Length: 380
Image 1 (cartoon, helix red, strand yellow):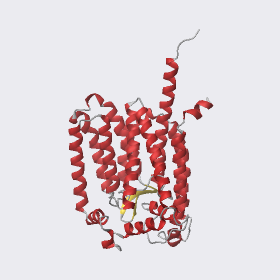
Image 2 (cartoon, rainbow, N blue to C red; image 1 turned 45 degrees about the horizontal axis):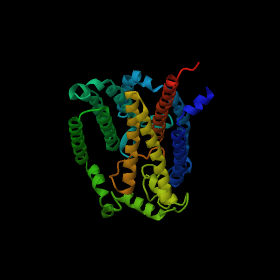
Image 3 (tube, rainbow, N blue to C red; image 1 turned 90 degrees about the vertical axis):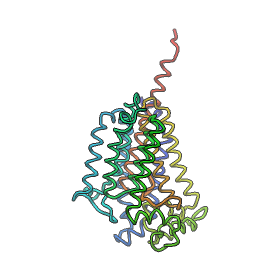
């Protein structure tokens, strides 16, 4: 039994995940202690909070790694209810505003960001519903549309915060799950056009969103305004070169680069550890995503397979959005780099998501072993 327990775990996935999360703690401290001294007169302010979240996430990871993923089907409706209620609570007196956006709920010393938990909740819900609709997934009204009503409600509640980046990522993940569910191409095309039109409309209705979308094309035209973050990110990347200036030796974290410990932490990684440090981070993310794709492909259950792919898409989209923003290839969306950026809710949800992947993997391995035993010839 003990041998089986050890053997059944996807150790490549688990070790890579905690290696990257540990690296993230190191970089959160390195990138934040100057800001922590300036704002709180305590160099350990941010790293202490992040470390507390990490310690809370470890037992959560172990729990969800062993919690049978099929049971989420029975909890799908409850999960939807919790998502809606938590997003509504953000707009009540329980909500906490930071930087002009009300996206958090304060519980004692901790700030919870419900939209982060929605990222995994919506994956579970859509995987559950679309795995049941396989018989008529080619019918738009009966098969494809109903679950998207829930997605639309979630999208609207997140936009009230407002948080276009997270809302867009959830919309993209939903569309990808619909695609892997086997929906018809014309249905996917129609949904893509509607989603693209909605994004464009929301982007141009707020001046600050237009500035964000346009400033990344020429940040130096307003390098002390809307282009400030990207210009300083460029400087950090250029300063780091191939091998970096050395851990803790960043200049940009000296209050030059805003959000150096959150959205733009990869720029500090690049400055201190160079291109090699960035390659390490992206290689770890790539390995986690690769293992997730393998797990989803090998899973015989449509529900488990869709959930695995949904988790992979969610993490991949966040990585693409974050790296794209830091490098100037995409507009700045405020999406953190999974397992690396400062942010307790993001760290906890990402670790729980990967724990669910690990549970699906355990089930795949055990099912394969059972099938092998059934195929063994009888001996005298």
